[in-house]
Image (cartoon, rainbow, N blue to C red):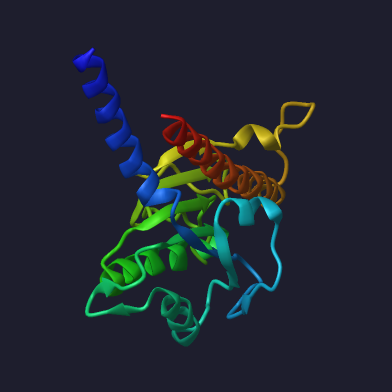
Length: 217
């Protein structure tokens, strides 16, 4: 009997620790956009119920050339001083696609430097540089998920340190061809974005179920 009690208590401590680091948190979500977005920057007034359920309390859409001033505006949410974040209950989720890959990566490094924390969850979607070459660096994050395709000329790549998903097949046509490179890039971006948003929702749902389990214990 005592062994069972010890096992349950150990499980409870383990799950409680996980719960404290995720379920109790709220999140800021930042999406860094690709070609054509320039230095755009906007805090969204509304976003999906799925994201709200996942704990997202603020969402920003930013261009691939977003200004440092606007990036500092995002960081103000975390009240970082001397390399330490003073709002431990607020987490960060970032997503960068196409040309937005570089600023997605750079912002993750800046967050670590100024706030002393890794991004909670980072998504890269067919990341490329402006000369259409592959972007090769994974964001600094506790969890990194990368969606990409392998057909040239415009393509991302698998990233070391990320969970990698090859989405090339979404471009495949009935004749077996993968079509125009830019068109395929667009299909992968759409599919990757949809998968990333679903992943955020499922991540939150899994944690919510864990919370219920803890309460039942």
